[in-house]
Length: 108
Image (cartoon, rainbow, N blue to C red; front, side):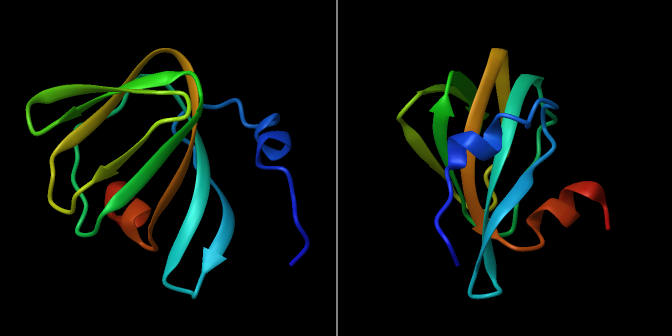
């Protein structure tokens, strides 16, 4: 697979909470980019989720606590943790997680 610029691919990503897959890892995991803006729903997953903030910052409400995650910082959201990303402006993240967790969110 040829190399690519994550930030260059992100330029066209304007709609919040619409992840775009950028890599498949062993067919079981994937990496995707997502824009944050506003408040997302409170939810949990059956597997861990790793979030790295590329631009901006988010507040992650996790297990009734608020944690700010800024550009260049990351956070591991443990499986089963109730969490809700919030963003006052616009942020961009690179997320790694087990495939299928997004379908759990969509109710599929």
